[in-house]
Length: 230
Image: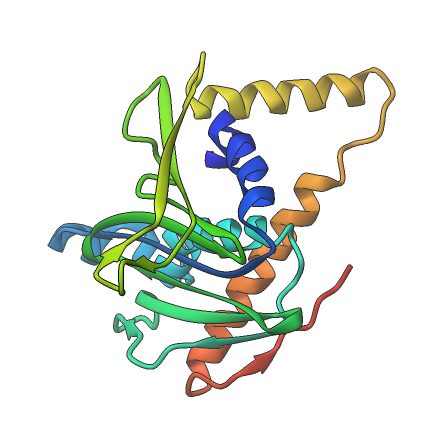
């Protein structure tokens, strides 16, 4: 959903200001109730076997790939300490993704941790961050922070980072924007055009990364090469 919010386009422009991007950190977590952790389809092996990874972790991985312009990672490694329920479904899982040129990213996805929805992107010239990247705090506007001139000053006695909060107004919710885009794509096909390749391509890449992270977790958090299929 967040991909369709106008804030995302504004953040994409901001990446050009802070880049090139070298590191990304994301987390999407919430503390599920006892009933949720017992009965929700997202914790069932025959419902959503990827659990927290496939649910909230999906947004984290998509955000990381977005920040790197959907360049596939070269390697993935789940972190030690992942929590699985008795059915083998991940309830709390974190991972590191490695990208070409020494770039990297990390994320945390969890059903047992206080609510967090953060995205931080670090570049050579600054950083970008937000604390509501999946679902905005407000319905008709959303903000993000761009930090530049990073560092210390006055004999390292104060932080000299310059931060700017940028706010983007939206006429419709990101959910409505998603369906509007979907309708436009359908009209293209109905008019005889080709189905868009962009959305299926990035969806497949996101899912393959999630599967690779789960494979790493089940292999003792091994660093696994990511096999990208174009």
